[in-house]
Image 1 (spheres, rainbow, N blue to C red):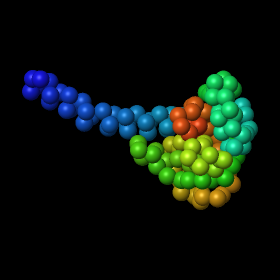
Image 2 (cartoon, rainbow, N blue to C red):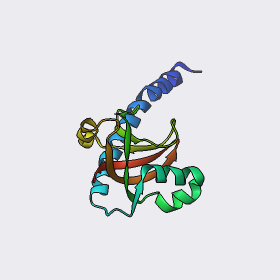
Image 3 (cartoon, rainbow, N blue to C red):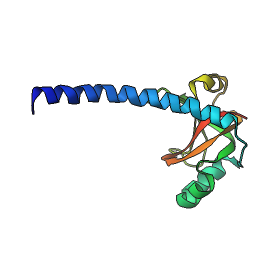
Image 4 (cartoon, one colour):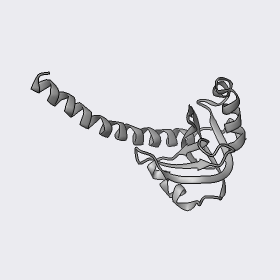
Length: 141
């Protein structure tokens, strides 16, 4: 392989993660603004939402994806993902995967204000199931 081609591939490899990080945080801010202006279409417990996706992901996707939900449940975990985006997960019967609510950086104070075991309701737009059922643009209802 030519030296110039190797340098281009190395540059692309180094810049790609930074681009992903930048786009990820922008998307969450935009999602949060959109969700703030939208009405809740479904009120559901975290366990019920997870159970519906677990039983039939296609049917649950047709019902919930791209809709705004208000999810109530017990906080399991609070953290940041690989893109440094804050999130809150809810307890479900499954100890490995569940409901993950992604927050905009401007809403990080919400993540800082809750503890595992707290019972809360978050409003956000269901993105789909990627291991966890992911809800974007989450904010306190």
